[in-house]
Image (cartoon, rainbow, N blue to C red; front, side):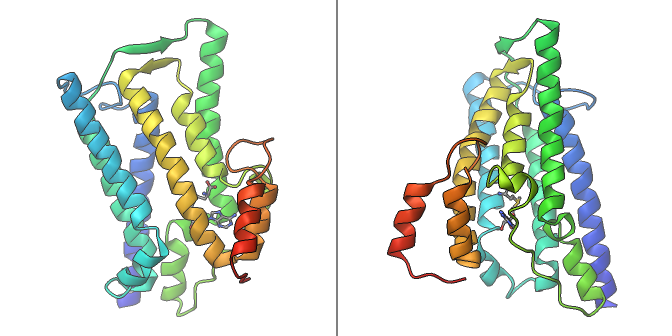
Length: 258
Ligand SMILES: C[S@@+](CC[C@H](N)C(=O)[O-])C[C@H]1O[C@@H](n2cnc3c(N)ncnc32)[C@H](O)[C@@H]1O
């Protein structure tokens, strides 16, 4: 009974995530939904900046804090390990929904592209960014990332397989293709408002910090393999060299685990 309940909890969380995530695409693209990044109740300029920055900060702290291995170690003493990821997905969806609901529009125009071809190119970038995000979840393991593999394995009284270290497909070109997809989607807009710019700039800063924290966990998990990968492959921009000098320094300073 408990296993079936956990499984149902995993599915419901995932469906809620799908709903919130789809809404977020339209929210950021400013189309098709009632509340978008550029609509809703207005506030005075600095009040709006304060509220929006607070919402983005809450999202960043929840997202990165709950993903850290130390937090997970402590948390799984309270939450059963099989539903740890499911609960993360549910809380993250809740915080994202709160952000969109309470977001204050700042509609001053920073740039507006008028040429038809440029507008089309930016919309194509927007779509491509989200496709990269979605595609990358399947390269790492979509079902594991959203907790379904864990609840399904628990239901079948099996151990959930640990996700493997990926260097294939988009991971050959950058170490964080999913984050790159978000960056492309957030910045590709024909009409950049002040509110959208705040969102894109804060998310870019957060992604840079979040990726650095994530790499610490990845080094702890995959050791020398990840360090070598980091030397070869750039963080976010394809074509750049990897973090050779930093990685080399760390490699010589620390003991190696594989
Ligand atoms: C939201 S995903 C983002 C992955 C990556 N930062 C990206 O932008 O493509 C976060 C999860 O991916 C895992 N991850 C990151 N790089 C990975 C890799 N090369 N192979 C396997 N898992 C990875 C992290 O441990 C974390 O659980």
